[in-house]
Length: 354
Image (cartoon, rainbow, N blue to C red):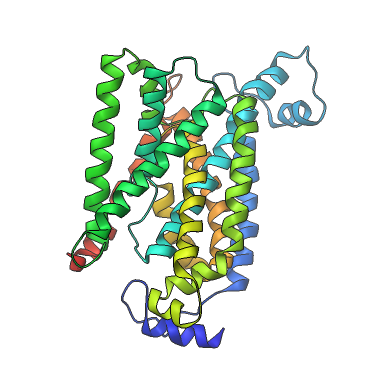
């Protein structure tokens, strides 16, 4: 590990002096995981208790462990609020891990599912499914979402391959914005022409309200597979984040690692969009916070990002309910309040990449 520290000093991912920053902080990661799990459990309890009808935390406990089908409060918890909370945690974790993988593979601080048009690609594919294949099942929508995620990522990376000087952070933002805007425009045109705007609008607003257990049953296998794959290649992503030439020098098959990483991102992002729509900026914000807290070893970054991403989306969903009760603000708007300024800060810091 000490050799990795010296290597990272020479090849800092953000171009800064890395000599004083260790490759990992295991003790810090343990504290982040422990604190994150506590915040997650507390946020989950609040998420289940708060709503149009406030429910006591004791009732939440009883509904989970001593369910009474005749109790209206128990039915609300089991059929509405519990699946909403579980989906928020899973979606937040998947998006955060997707962003972490992208940033590690590309050594690009601006990489995230929405910046690289993965999210917009998924939403575009779902719009196509609504327009041309009405009545598509939940699993069918998820498959369409996977295909759209691959399309969005492929277009952005394709532009990067033909870009002089490679895909720098600012070029990535420009290419992602261009592709994302194009796919969003196509989605809007399809939605208006085929009169499915109402259905498509949900996916672009983003949110976990109304999530059913069936959607979670489909999300869990996709999330588990994607996260498992990412955990397997976590060490390889750490080496790749130090520089592609260095990774090759250490005997790593960089193209294989990138291919596996992209597949996992498509799987994680496609699954989340099919359930919760286009929720932005979690994959941009959380990996940066996690690296600051635990260092740059992706064996720690991945699990910590998953926990912190789940925490962020659960609390954002709670805030979305409290902003303008009894109406709900789209949770994507809440994450954007934090994400847009953060993105502008990163873009300004990386402006030398032009």
